[in-house]
Image 1 (cartoon, rainbow, N blue to C red):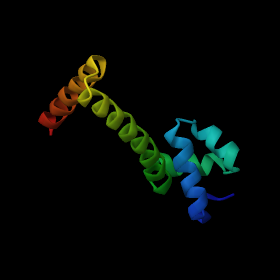
Image 2 (image 1 turned 90 degrees about the vertical axis):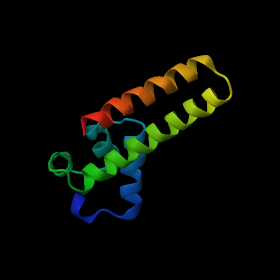
Image 3 (image 1 turned 60 degrees about the vertical axis):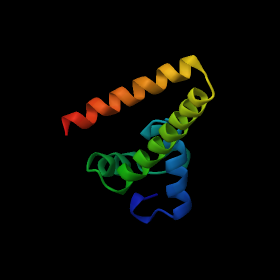
Image 4 (image 1 turned 180 degrees about the horizontal axis):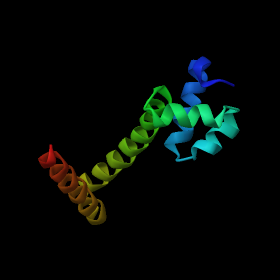
Length: 96
């Protein structure tokens, strides 16, 4: 199937597969999409790129949220991880 005619359900499926870090090839096999079209759109930062990134960012959000919740509840390892996240983000923002 062409990526130019994706339904909302297919877009959500791509996002869900990306959120659990399936490869582009695996996503295309599972959803019966053309890998060359998928990869081309991704490489050109088209709609596929945005869908895949959204899925990955949503997963990252859930992971970080859990880390910060655990840190707030007194988990020392989570507090250390939270500090690393904060420090890395602060350094990244200084580069801007």
